[in-house]
Amino acid sequence: MNTADHRALPKPFQYVLLVLISALACGLGYAVLSLPDQAIELKGLVEANLEASGVRNPVTAVLLNFRAYDTLLEMAVLLLALIGVWSLGATPMRRGADPGPVLSALVHGLVPMMILVAGYLLWAGAHAPGGAFQAGAVLAASGVLLLLTGKRLTARLTGRPLRIALLAGLGAFITIGVIVMPAGGMFLQYPPSHADGLILFIEATATLSIGAILTALFLGGRTVSGGER
Amino acid sequence: METITLLERVFDGLLMLTLLWLAWRALQSPDLFKAVVLFIAFGLTMALVWVRLQAPDIALAEAAIGAGLTGALLLKALAQSNELADRVSDDHTTDTGDTHEHR
View 1 (cartoon, chains in turn orange, brown):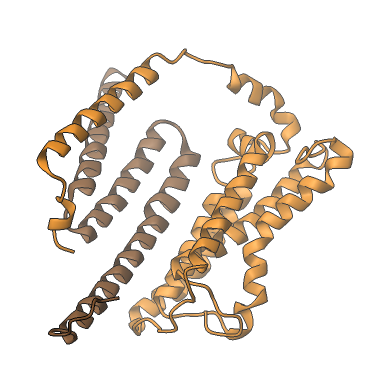
View 2 (cartoon, chains in turn orange, brown):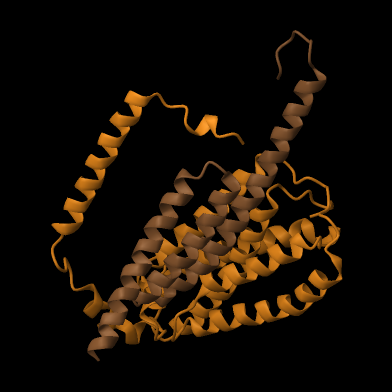
């Protein structure tokens, strides 16, 4: 990684770029400053309908109920990213270096705590800051720690069980979205009486999937079924 | 009360300057490893900014995903690309004097 390839642009071109980027920055600044104070009274709208959403945290209400379709697509994007990485090839079989006793002991202590924290964040998402993405990220961080200390899934788990874990979130989301259609009339329109349970279920499976997907992204290659993760 | 708002203003100002400085350093650092570390620091500062903007949900996501996992992913990608570069340069040194193009 030498410095030369980062500074390869000829001087005049750099000035042109500078002018263009400055113009872009000015345009963006103008656009932000000329925004109307509040285009639509979204905050009041969310607060007025919070009762019906099944959760008490307005952010979760928006993410998992009012704009659930966006969250569904986010899950799909994560999965697509993983498919993209997997299409590049299988994961190298090489194991990491031996972690040593101190790191091993630390990880043994940390990972159960992190799983507990992920569970708490998932549960807290209904009434306080938290939710599936945060919980999934913490879960994935514990997965990354395990990978860094040389732990791998056993061959039995890398095939179908892992793939089910990767797909569970999106699968549950779409399934529930379709199941509620006869009752609500529209995709993902939960009946208010069951919204809390449905949201919790979607978030729980989403947490598992997000954790698995992000960990698999860190591993960075397709796991061979029956092989080593 | 007055002094508290003044302190908050100063803190916010410092936070903003730190954020911009970290972003600039991360972008212009020729050493990629340093850039990644600066990016992680940027993510953590960004999480603090979200807290100051009273968006704790985003702050949590930023700290966990923006700083933690993206940082880990970038470090891993960097290690792999370095490994790849080493392998390519090894091939070149063993191939010296050889006329055909490297693949």
